[in-house]
Length: 278
Image (cartoon, rainbow, N blue to C red; front, side, top):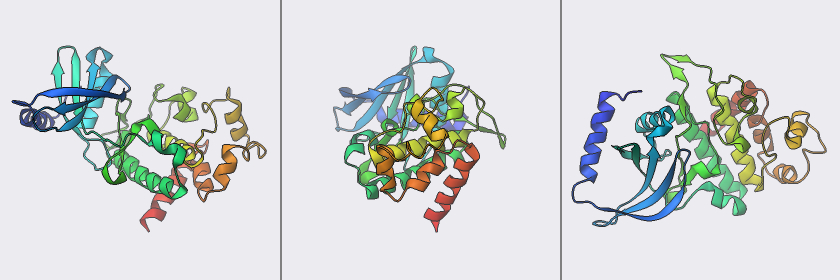
């Protein structure tokens, strides 16, 4: 895996701008990413703050893929990768710091109006990734950070991959993601299309922020909750968090995003995007 020359040159320029007399100090641990720990670091000279991710290069292709993909993304709703450095067997990534934390910490006191604002932003975020031929594969509340002015930002590209090559969509394989938010075709370890698995995860995120709960442990037939959903058990899909979902105006959207048939998810997604654009 190699970088385009312009990407390498841009990174070298950024490294030079941030190095020299600047000294960084670790402030606190922010969390654990897919392939490395993330800490908050502060510049002793000017108090500039960044999120610092240290990854063991022994993790191989997935680590390099994250670096390659993230370095070529530029969007207000994607956590910015400022620059990176190779230090021996480790990769050091210097990222945008989102001081308001992740969406996970807002779930318990989320209003429907707040949830709607975040899902609209998430639609734009994921739409941007897909337009660049990238599928994230690990969308969940802990990977959705809150920037200034309540801007929702997608973080942790460790499991992302390119699903379009030379203008052609590739069928994906591999068990990648967090089971609670993974689409059933991923958990079944079947070949799958990229965008629908992200859309499923968005449906799970929306369900979570609207109800402060998840409908099942994982979307697999071994899970009784998911089995009830597949069979459209009306008694089950009316209890607990499902009842709270019915009290909102987003029930049909969640049902569509969590459709078992990936093509139905895409249709629901496209309809919602069109509605928000009108």
